[in-house]
Length: 232
Image (cartoon, one colour):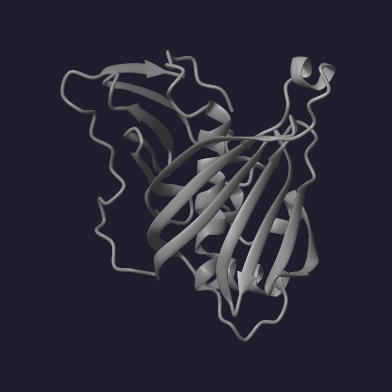
């Protein structure tokens, strides 16, 4: 998805933001019961049983070599930025994904609209939520129980004690090629978002609470005082 607003180079890329949204979904697979052996079964259990959750995340970017680097013989990816923060969500379509380090930025949805707030710019971009999710990895969290309508699911084996599940979007116009989700004893250990440019977003999660009590207006977005509002 694309936003038409000014974004300094130091800010996370739009792709990272999209990954962030996607991440929210997979993040809470940690709440799935350990009784299920396969990653696929755990994902389906999560979608069916976890209606809301909150927790913390760390997000790391791995950049693929640029065309210029590839032309000069470079083939190894490079480490990009690392960010961290908190999240809370309630399906369908309500969440707050807050980057706290190294820069403060908030992605928030109230079920109808998606708000992206850049604190340093004091700027809010607003767009309809429906088109922002679609068959993206975010649908893992915010969508309904029809994951297999938008993704092809398959178990990807065990690596270093972690059971991996792979989701491949069925839509051809998505910016992600595949999404990897790793579990250990029913808890989410890692998530990998592979985009069409060869970049990878790595996510880890901690302190996850499933189905916590949430206030009725928990996801209502209030525009910060003096902030510029842009409709995307």
